[in-house]
Image (cartoon, rainbow, N blue to C red; front, top):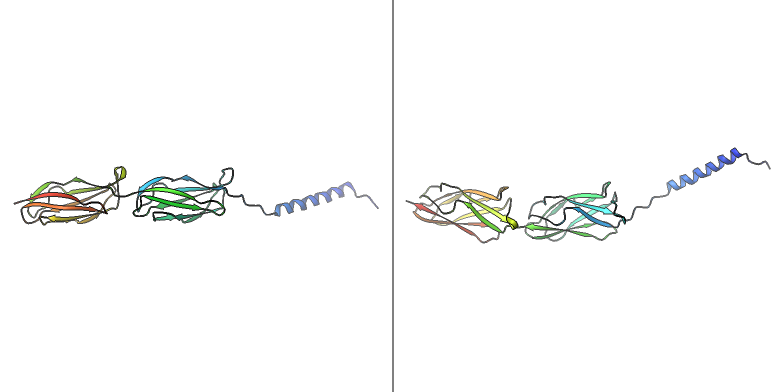
Length: 229
């Protein structure tokens, strides 16, 4: 029986190695196991209730070495406090991260957002909702004007939350309680400075005029003016 030439042996060996390499390449790659989810940005913020937090929430899916894992779905579910989150789920990018905007619920001071992914424990992201806590009469109290005319200086009301933070979009209602007269407008939403500006017109009878300023569930604030003959 003739002995195979070295060239034929080499060709045969190369072919066998190529088949082994091809088989190895076709073997499915096991996905990297997730070890957990971490909060990269946006935890423990404070923000006005009913509005989006100032900083987006960034979450990262990580492996056992702490490296981000791409292509995993993180689902976001509101916990306590209500509100909304956009998006409610996302697939992690090259850094293993997703980003979301969290709009707080309308009343709660303590609010939570849960982040989950298959195979790992959920984590909670906390936020503090800032609610109206104080009504300040910035200007216009204790003025006088002739009966049936508007006060010379408009009334400015400011609504603040904890830490003297001005609150935006809060409804302020003003109601005359004595002396007649009227406000223009009688209700308004606070601007970016947390303020509303209204004109107070005196009643038709000389004497004391009073009104109440009502914000949310806070106690009404009384303001006064005098109508002169």
